[in-house]
Image (cartoon, rainbow over all chains, first blue to last red; front, side, top):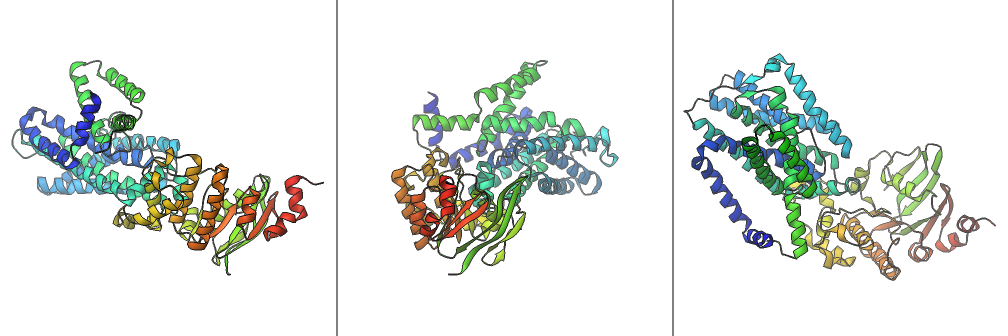
Length: 326
Length: 247
């Protein structure tokens, strides 16, 4: 039964699948306007999961500090929108671009410092990044310190704000998906996988491993930074510890979503983000009071039963049944 | 023939252990050179030193006349000095063809050149080399699913894909089915003659190395015990002592 369904899905050419998803995504906020913000957050989750997987899945470097780029993006956009004096949309556009580039700058600096460390040591070193950033932001008056920053009010009419940010976030997620899809298909993508499989060997074969790692981190940081800028506007308020540099929520979720969907695959993080986000929202709605317990159980179940993720499970099943790839 | 590799009095210590003690060795362009010695005699350490895996404690290594002992592994590889490992190293989660594609010289470029060149380049060359080592049928399989011997052959093909000037092979026949060893010797010789790759080979199988190498260096306790033509080294009393124990 499951295999028949999987075979049917595989028989759909990727282009058809993409167009179908595009149509659904464009229509969704009009069909279900009350869920527009929830769906915008879904796209945020997709960006988080995908950008985490660039290093975590494709390159084999588990980062627990990527939330740093998200937070930097939140604040960069907020500062531009507060201080630039430009009209709302101009300030927003400039702020989002700057959010991306500030995140890249942080990725370059920390990449240079940390990407020489390998394996568990890198994971532990990055764990400190988000925490330290949250504490620093909470003590810096220029960005509102512990009381956070309120975002400028959206000038449009009632109901249009949700739609507007839905499409902005959808645009970011789509651009991110296609950038990564293209990147993984180039020789750069192969080089990332080579480093994941055996970094010493890759170095001994003359690959410029350090710069490949830093550039990969910077690319993922760019989209995460832009998404942070959009998210701050969607929420309307940035708290340093609970929103921008929230390692316990966003920081952990992005890892889980990528693992759930399947590390090191293009579609895995997307699928993982969708399933995780929907499940999480259902927990918050129907298991209120127990939602965090349920989420914790879900995490354990994910790691126990899908150690290779959903895509990994599909691949293994395909190998077992001898089915052909689409 | 000009000197391609010139190792001059290289010393490497691990704490109190002197793994290489003033080792000198030359490899001429176009030849197949052999490196032998009992276990723990410092052969793999010398390979590591030549490839830049660690800084040496004394001496200097010249590749094509330029000192290279201060360079890192990657920089030395990009000059055309590549090694294979005793414990085979391949990219296990990638297919054989992907392993080959990422081993080409074009993969050694900077970020922009990696983007410019699509992964499909050099396809024919990669397929030819896989056929050369007898792995063409396996080209779309995951490298990690190959047997140990096949992985060794793949690693050899990957090294050839990078068009090295000098290839250092660490025990190429270890773990290979004895019936396949003759075929491997033949391939090493063809790589040397037809592709113009100079080889420096660590080998424990005396029959193999005596047939293969034109020049052999024997190490023991981190020092050069003997060096010269295969026959001369094989009959050297010091070498016999080192392998069979002093009488």
